[in-house]
Image (cartoon, helix red, strand yellow):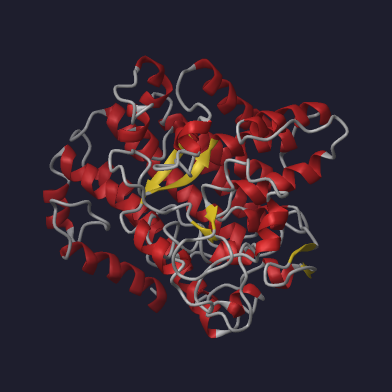
Amino acid sequence: MNQYLNKIALSILMAFSAVSCSNFLDVVPKDKILESQIFENEAGMQNVHNGLYLMLASDDLYGRQLTMDAVDILGQQYNMPASHTKGKMAIYAYAEANPKDVFTKVWQKAFTTVLSANKFLESLDEHKGIVSQEKADLLKGETIAIRAMLHFDMLRLFGPIYKVDPSMPAIPYYDAPVTANNPILSAKDAMSKILADIDRALVLLEKDPIQTSGKYKATTAYDSNPYYSQNRGMRMNYLAVKCLKARVLLYAGDKTGAAAAANEVIAFTKSTPFFPWTPFLDATNAANPDRIFSSENFFALSDYTLYKTQEDLFDSKLADPMIYAPLLNRLTAVFESNDNDYRSLPSWKIPVVGGKTQKTFFKYADVPDTRMTFRMQIPMFKLSEMYLIAAETAPVAADGIALLNTLRYNRGLTNLASTAVLATEITKEYRKEFMGEGQLFFYYKRNNTTAIPNGSAASGNITMGALQYVVPLPDAEINFQ
């Protein structure tokens, strides 16, 4: 049993004893005695399971680095000159201290969470009968899907450019609570395991209540989808796993499969009143804008430190070497000089304090009305991405343009001409849609885009290749193979 995974296992066991059972638990049980106490009732099981979501929302994963920080820097979303604290990250200098430390922590937290998920699955099987079979299936389905999602994002980050050579070494895969290193698999073999986990999760989630959510009605003006916002939409539900499948299949080059999954989700939204496009008045509300388009999110993480992260990264009072902000002309180019785009003005504004003359990012800023259910949420899977996937995989370009026009209409934009170049327009929408969500870099990598706009220069591109797209595995992982 190597030192690296020993540390992961020890961190899980030690952290558990420090967490009150009255709160969400963010780790697995310390030993069999404590495990029996925790798993003796449904509430205990649910608390441990909730802990997986808290781990996903940690700074080293989707609460920061895999959404609005490191991965967005790699996507050139911000101006990061050499004087910036993250300047080395922006030039893909992965051997430098800061990038190396950040991505080592990302790797460690991802596989700590995977180990926690596997331990939960083992414990759930060991305590059969405490919850109903239907409840057990939901818990298992969510957990296996979380495991698949984490492996997939480690593959996207640390694996090779998949469309160039999927046979190259990528990542290990952990589908059991082992504390010994699993071998590094090829990207193709890792992808097969990811897809197998996704399909297994979908079977377990076939009776997910989210699929019958049409019977629920809104109860207040602040909650257009109470069942979504209070329950399944905050969890890795059936629809979220379908979205994950579409994302994974497209990355693997299976356009037919990706199209089927994305269109299934789209068809579902057309058959129920839930997951509608976020209305203009909600997205652009002057007092309480819904900048994350919450009604469209099939799965969002609750991050109780989100507003602290917003301040740490985007606050206008931050000095230039610390703030994450784009050059104004670059941002103007992204939105094509159109502030009518619902994604522009509410999320990007010249602040009234702090002395900044460039626009700063407000997407994750708090709103005055604490009744708003979208507070402290980070989108994970959403309707717009399914339209983008469906457009990219459409067999006829005109059908793809029509799907893009649906997205554009619901972002306040006019229709594209029938002569528009589909691939170009899809890239434009990815650049607008996923700011602060970490998907643009992976879009570029999936397509092996050879040049992307340089976020730290007023003009010009950065040449991209394997040295930029492939984050090296942490030293500890290499040394213990």
